[in-house]
Length: 574
Image (cartoon, rainbow, N blue to C red; front, side, top):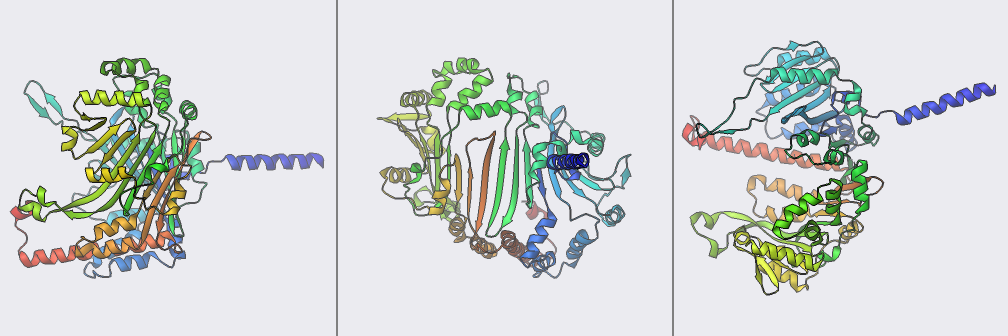
């Protein structure tokens, strides 16, 4: 009896261990190679459920999108067939991924992966599609394929389908004999594409993203969207570098970022975790940074703040990276020619940075700067900007400023350094001294900022959100759209107004390094805090689509009135 109980417990514990350690990656992801740089996945079934819970169906969305255009019934039927009669499995996830071709970093391969519910129906749907120069379906041992263009193939087996875009960059070279640039002819990529497709359809799971623990773990979290970024794809680019740095491959390889996207009530939430390899983890742990300095944004010469970006880090981390890569001596030898060392360079800054943007909108050109008739009517974006970078060690910062001044980029004016001719022509107003560097949109904004007597108008929710974070982002969407909406054209005014009344703001942040990872979060907050954000967003996009179709229809009607026989070629070309 005891032996039976022990055996039962052993089996039970083993089963739990197997379940807890099992891979949560969707089965179709075995077609995604391990060297994929980015994988973006979304769950159409989860999105449909969120919409249905909010009282919206796909049919109602499409009906509203076509409500002001009943002339194009053919387009409506095409959409309906794609949804209902294509053989695509809309219950499974879709995945977009890209990766560089092995041995050739100039070739980028992009793919869309999805599942098939019925291969026969899928084949019938493809046979009914018509387009110019359409080629027939062909068969390989492990899949069928249909060329969509020279570098774009659709391939499928009984369960899954891939749309592959084979991007072969052609690099011009200079012919020194004939003294002219030559653009090489693109070779036929069909053979290479079929080789890649064969590799993906036949690769073992151990060679795919499905075998990556962090990738599978990401899908444990219920969400509507997922993103996974790997540093593995950069190794191909590093291998082509003329100078191979010691330990660079070790520093870059096996770093992963996993993110989820969820549509919650009143907001869209994206959460991410960056997992770092042992070497990078040791550097980040040794040179842990402080948190953002909100004192830099306590005052600002405007009550109309549009965006804030802040970051805080330990500048000594640059030295730590150089030491681990065993190139500190080489870098110092190079910098010594300029009269500064690497330690003096990164020691010149404190490690804080604050960027504030305000009063964005569209305005007329200032009267004194108008040079011709066109400038009298053309409107341009306007706004205020402050970038504040406090100094680290004063002696290092002053030495660095002196070296920059010697090259003419900045000029000394008393105890301050200001923009030189080059920066001035670029519209950069800059003032630097032993306290730090400030870049402003103009001299008036700088002077008002330095007076330090105008308290910045930032909502308390955002200020509390900033506390204890290493980087922060804040964008007041409603206020920004309000600034641009005043001058928008009639065709898109309704869309802009709807967007302003839909989206409130965006807030994002990241924590300092902890437990071999860095966690980040991004929230898009809606004006309506009770309605599901997907329902809110779909309503917004549907309204924009209606406006866009209405504008296109009006433009077409205007063309037909002006040119009943069609627009002349000369006018259309220009």
